[in-house]
Image (tube, rainbow over the protein chains, first blue to last red):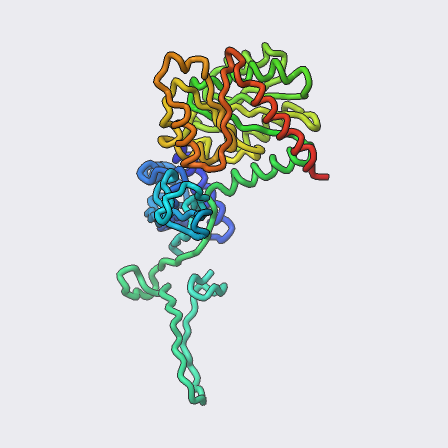
Length: 114
Length: 271
């Protein structure tokens, strides 16, 4: 639901980076998105297309890099892979987990035309 | 910036136009493909693609504002609580009941977030507590920038309490740090016990869950223990208090929780 404001934030960052580095058009944007970032990728893709119009990233291609969710299991004392927040530890079945990865929401890289 | 070796050159070649008189071999594996198109063809004179690693946190702007808010709260010993829930869980009623009791002993103010109308702020003002309404329009959450301006207008006192009632939405406000001390999720028993599993991000982001409207439990098929177990499944550290804002049941525990948080906020007040 808030993907649109996330997209506006992306556009703002792209415009600012373009201004600072003195280039005119962004060709492609790679976003790193974790499963716990609270972002729905299909909504984000739609929002990106709309919000980049008439900006430095007008018509830019969007590439999504999906990261994996990782949690620290206090029982096993090690990092484990999970897919949902409510998942138990795949090794011991405990819910004594603390999410350590999967909340990523960033612009990883961009390609520009010179 | 060059994405391969991190240098500041954008167009350079790693050619060795001189002879080396050494007896070891070295491979130069820097592949600078700026002169190539995606198809791998080099077209002289054409503008070419350049990749720049930016690593920009998309929420950085909000997080910067949130950190500024948090600094202000810390310096002034203000406890800021971000109340989050779905619409109709009883956030405003819980606040009304709370304000009527706490205003006798604590200096407190309220920021009300809604998409439209000033109905909630009008209700809060009737309790005699100063409040400001933030209408987000089409926005589904409060952000740190809005909150910063709102509390500026409220002129908060030192060692006081600030309630931020977020937009009724169990999804988006989870992602936006407002600079608050913590999020308090309100879940009413009429909503069903599976909400923590259905909306895990919010319950993972909250420190405390207020299970509201417990006076209605006799009329419902709501398994309190199962609901708490679900909440702990997504957040093993979440504290839970059972309350009824209309009958006042369990509210003392909530006031004690606030009082303990205020004590520690004052104790850690940044000098």
